[in-house]
Length: 173
Length: 450
Image (cartoon, rainbow over all chains, first blue to last red; front, side, top):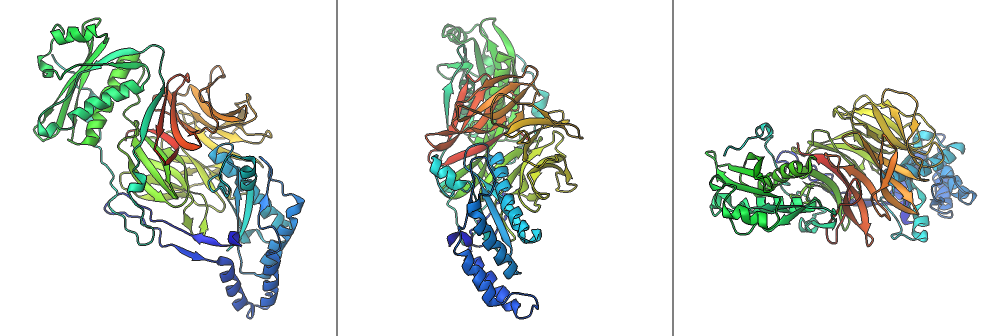
């Protein structure tokens, strides 16, 4: 489930004077969903209302059975019914694992301008965020952000590549 | 013969190159060479009528003046690149400037070769070791001087190029009646493999300096009006999340400051003409909406208020109006709204997709991206007449940016699937292209010298 992992590949930011050299740190590769699961299961025993570790594990298992990404039509941001199970599974997981946070990354195909596509990706991420809100997920546990057309999963200028890139990815943190 | 020394020459600030001092990294050591593919400039369209000009060599055998040849080369290349001037062979090196007269044989020879104007110049070392470059522009038809300049600069390749650009600007303005655009700077993003570089160069793509490198995308570059800072959007990781954040980067010092890092995405910075604040796009209240923020990141104030997308803000040169893209009418179109509030007014109607507006510095034109026959092209609208000219061919052009003289536009384009930079005159006829071999270059912003 590569999409649930987040790679912290960073890079030294080189500033330009003798006095200032900006460094952004070292690279690491952390499977965040596993880490969050471990943290929340440790806290579950002390939290009166928290779900049990087994409930979290069940919600996590359910996540593995749904489509991990939500796809959209050209210049559109409506969530199609086929992705409702994905929305529901993420909502259930966030309810079970009270420490988890979700970042939803919206994406756009390459057609159009850089910033308009950033806004389109944002609108897709927000559509997912709102759908989670309808299912009772608190707004402060979800952040909708956009990659615009900057991080295409599929390269090329074909209909298939464009369709792959009109997408929102919910990423557990 | 006396040469008028332009007031502005003395007022020029000293050019301070910002130098990447070292690569202090342990994990991702990026090869400097990876980003050093030389930029190549090609002239892809020229005017039907060109003014023939000879540029006599500024050469010198004096070791301290070893960059003299560069000055000559830069003047010639700039003028040729303009598309409206052709370079006539100036023959062999010539005697020093103070020995020339308009009646000497060489001058007659240039005239016979068809040169309507001749640039004659020379260099000398001033008492403090700097290079003094003097030149005059002669009109061979009327046998008269069109003026000249004395430029004093440190002895370096970079400064020699600057001097060449200034002379080319002088010649261009005298011969065409339009301000030149050679002594200006470009910023753009270069991508080599997985590394994004924020690059600043002279207008001809030379003198490149890398201001920033990142593994994450850099987009939406915007020069501060005084040419000392760049605003941009970086997707670099902060607090465990990769998302777009707006930075302002001071080039001379390399210092960066976050201007907007609100919940959600932060993007599309545009400077107000006085340089005191920026328009940005934030999503903190849900939806991409336009906000104003002081250049130090304080005082965020919402400008647009719709349920849809409002983005790509840009100021009119008088600072009173913001042009922007909105989908409020069902498709992406350009609107304008008074900065201090009021009704938004739709500006574009000619296509189902019009976006990314930029107003020319003289306030007369709007450049934008328009979708014509499934191709994204650069459109130019004369604001007074609303007359539209399509100046590029697509298929995926983006990020149009006006030269400081309002006569040219640089934009992102694709050539055989690779991102290159293209520049075009407002009428679409004169064209040049800036490419970087295997590297991708995109997102250009054209700025003035500091």
